[in-house]
Image 1 (cartoon, rainbow, N blue to C red):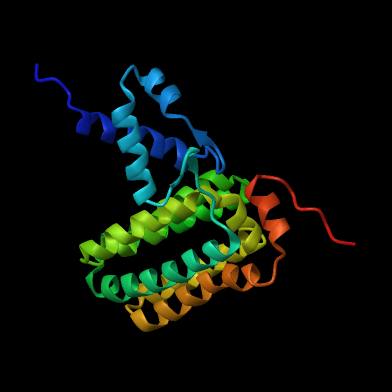
Image 2: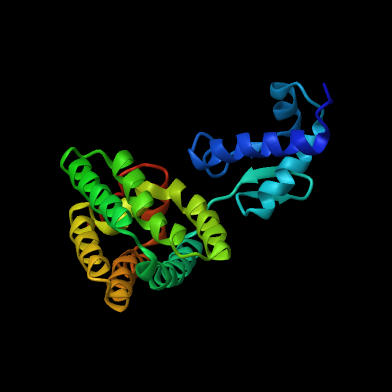
Length: 231
């Protein structure tokens, strides 16, 4: 059997750490020690060091001089910037995807919307967000633009760690269901411009709140805590 080289090892370690970061098993602020990671995987520190460098390129990890690597957190301003880029990418995705969507694609969107409504009634935010992500991602997948798809996946991976923050910014899930229904209706009518307009309004909701909510409240929400109410 051909031995596994360091490049292969580094990618495996990167993939493992990335999944733990995106699933919040390694939350923002966690320090990543090369020695501990290497020991856990039974490998040398060289591929771990390369894996951390690759994660830094993805903007999931910050490498600090003489202190090592730490899982990055999105500040409120960075979170706002991510929403702005997401809005631009998804509007382009819808413009490209709507003329290409098949009847089967439309059925998939209807099914995903029904799932979101069901999970909202059950107060199941985790499953809601999985269906929500699949609903939005389908437009990127059907856009026919490989670069758009890669950029979108990378951005959504960064943002999906912050589901609690997104839920707080939306004020709950009920409003989101109605907004998705309107987007779906426009897509089914093959009205790409109207779908783009509705999608833009949908993604601008959290952006407006981000501009007005105090940073300390967002930090509490990102940590999974209910923010203190101001008197």
